[in-house]
Image 1 (cartoon, rainbow, N blue to C red):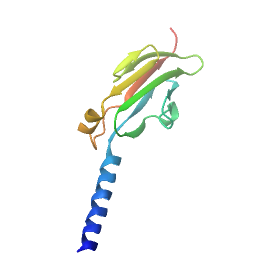
Image 2 (image 1 turned 120 degrees about the vertical axis):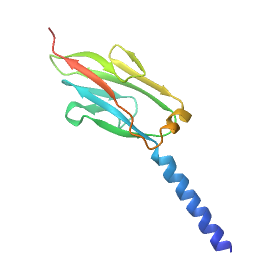
Image 3 (image 1 turned 120 degrees about the horizontal axis):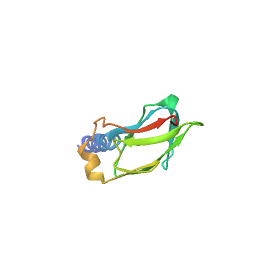
Image 4 (image 1 turned 90 degrees about the vertical axis):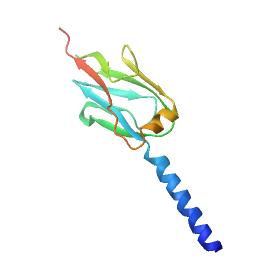
Length: 116
């Protein structure tokens, strides 16, 4: 009996751990020539890596910065919660992130263009 309860607890703990890892998938895409840096390690993206995807667990608080390649300009952000110049900010509560558990949500798009 005690061994069965211990195994149930292990199974429950493993399931909880897996559910916490599931999260939602979000990321960054790049159009044109440039890169995107992030405040969180592992979330930056270069044009040759785009689209970049990662799992978000808990509250999603991130600031992305669009960095144009030489001779290019940052034009705009799309699918960004709080765009401001070359920065894109996300500040999403954990309960909202949990609503999208396991989902692949559209990534933020950094658009770069050549000068006119």
